[in-house]
Length: 194
Image (cartoon, rainbow, N blue to C red; front, side):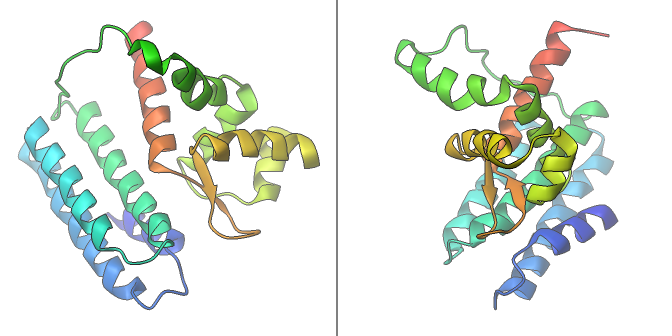
């Protein structure tokens, strides 16, 4: 929770009059969800109820910049869910999709597979799951410069996997980006059991 507090504080929009109220609300939400780690077992219904609470809270957010803060609290919540799964207290259930809908082929490739099927873009997404990054940070990490790096960042932003806080601001992973990376990670683990 200490790490979540620091992450949330550093990744929320600073120049918002609702910042302190939202910070308090988000920390209460994360405290409540973290309590379930002590319970020893968490059901799909409980996790889904928290996801629904997040949707309701997001609808109350009056500003476009609310997406930045909600993206961060969602990322922190999903980290808690991942922790619950790794501790074995939450076992995700649900129907397995046998095959994607026929009409979704183009979208699946364009919006999901293509953006992550590049080592530099994958590195960018992976690093943004941990913290926000500046253009310079991403450049140093990937070894890409100028137009080459902009090309890859544009691919990720066009797919809705990352966004830039404001012009010349830090890059952050979106909810879609986080879910995509979590799904890729889970797929890899399923295909390569220890």
